[in-house]
Length: 167
Image 1 (cartoon, rainbow, N blue to C red):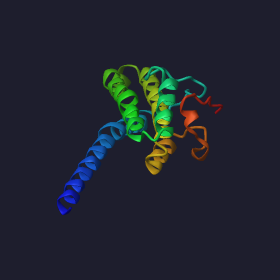
Image 2 (cartoon, rainbow, N blue to C red; image 1 turned 135 degrees about the vertical axis):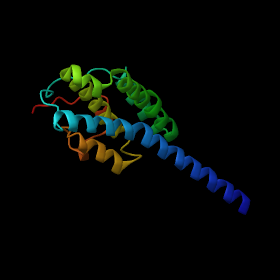
Image 3 (cartoon, rainbow, N blue to C red; image 1 turned 180 degrees about the vertical axis):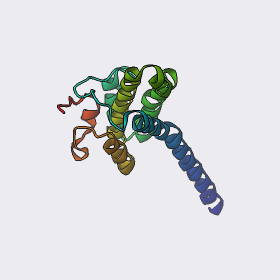
Image 4 (tube, one colour; image 1 turned 60 degrees about the vertical axis):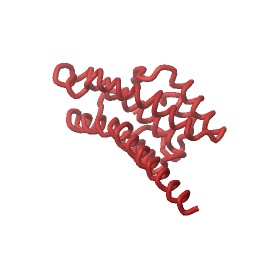
């Protein structure tokens, strides 16, 4: 039994290490880039974006939210997280690499602002979807971007729709 427990611990440690690496390299990198570029180039505020509907970075976001919610309701948490990573975060990080908003700022600050605004919407959605899994981290992401709906009020359904801002 000691061998099984030891072997089990190594698996758990490997799983935790892999999950932490995914968090840092995927979600953390996306958030860090977005906040750093907005802070450095736009003084932390994307002015002129109130009431502007974000562009589509991830196709069929409402369908993905429903899929993820279905996984959560069926206690298929691994599949929910995998969908968030593979179908939302990976394509979004590819979008960042393709658009290079840090370089775009030098030639077209308005286009860079638009890309960063679109990334903010993805961070809003992902923070809501991760709320049951990583409540503190999800809240930090959500509050860092100053979204209009209070964190305490957001539900999974809110991830599928864009909240119009009135400010």
